[in-house]
Length: 273
Image (tube, rainbow, N blue to C red; front, side, top):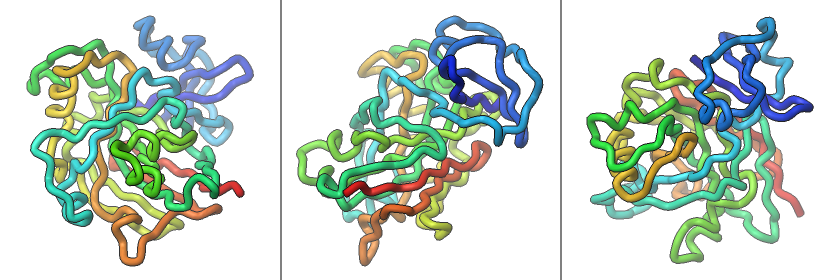
């Protein structure tokens, strides 16, 4: 199934997406409330054209956004960086989350080196602590597209990456969550990014150094994963920073992240000032 969130005057609501249509659910609440309540996916209203809805981020208030750096060998190579022997873990703050079609905004006084990173995002479905690699995928609710937007000047000015990757709007997600039962093998998905229609990154999740099951198991051994937590699984080569000359997103640009079996996450950029 494809589970989307959309805006209403009463707050966020959930709906099931089929082709270009959406069926609102009977449950009156957002994704976290529904996940906590364990309610069935019961449709309440007629199926309506998807274009009539303004989609929200599929997970609007994650408790944790756990990101993994250098998880594709070719990305490490393009940056002349050593391939990690263990997952390189950092965090993004929840204030950075926005949905499909939302503007990515930043101050020109703060940064002018804003980059894109196409990523498969794992949505945790149940409380998980110290799970094995063999059982890890059973803890996953589903998958969505993500863009680990990065202010490279801020990122590399610090000893860690949180500031450069957690500016408001720097974690677009969507357009919906595809349930894990529809993606039985998350290591066989084509992934790409396009900037103004030009392909910048093109790879497959098979190229991950640490696959999804290993990441879930590894992370759960260090801290408890809660329902609705997100794991951003890393980006392949082709990011703007390591190009010659470098390519950074500019005001008015359209950045698209596409992942096989999930869909396309599209966002416009706006540099303020």
